[in-house]
Length: 370
Ligand SMILES: *Cc1c(COP(=O)(O)O)cnc(C)c1O
Image (cartoon, rainbow, N blue to C red; front, side, top):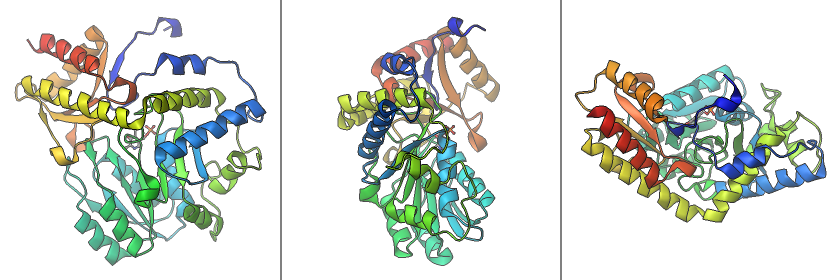
């Protein structure tokens, strides 16, 4: 298939989301070198904008050169040495992935699980934190596999009591719901560009507290990953400008433009836009027999999970999604892990969180289900 002949899709799945034309235009700008002062100024701007968006003053706030999973890996491998205890709150597939990443980094992994579609129980987390006394407590803010927005306050407080580092996955929250790393007391957090930031996939904005940076500096053993070692990365994104790996220059142009669009809109307006779009989606889908999986109190606006109507079987649902894509050029997501075949995951992320998109989806589904 020729790249020029690609169809235009409305991407209402769990990511990627559609990209603003101004971001696409930024991606097409001429290359300059990764040590060129012009590029370094753009990188500085991106770091400053990311600090504002993450709600942090952390000097080490940067776009990592890989997808959200690399952000997860970076946060864990820099803080964890072999034998360290890590406690993971598992509320879905991405919490599960954290366990796997921590285990491979040599951690002794402990976990607190919850039912699919539920938030982590802060009391269960507190009990486990007190019992395990972990070095790191890690969990997901916006669990894209279930559509839960996890309250963070109580878990962070419990982690602080034992002086544990807190790692937070903000992949589907950053740019869609408020994120306040410093106010919450988060030590390491990461996101991904293709969800609520509405940029192409390929970068993972991440931020490390001074305490996390010191922890990585004072390790007894080198960070397991050379590529994601913040001791090395900070020498390029900081003042020294020492070459580590070639920055993904074009992708960073795109992110710079995406962040500019977010600031021009303002986070308050943007957060409200996500709420309004999700509410309209839930209301319209209810008329078609789709019911929300998650309690209203912990529902994630940027990603809505819906139980299928009784008339739609497991086999039907995959076909229905295929026809939605083929005939109406709309992508939605199926269930992941234990929820496969039982739910749909509909993303209204970043640029896509608009009533017009909700209406387009509802119109298509009304026709397909008629
Ligand atoms: C998408 C996602 C990831 C992984 O990001 P990739 O860009 O696919 O590597 C991690 N955590 C959450 C919550 C996600 O939604």
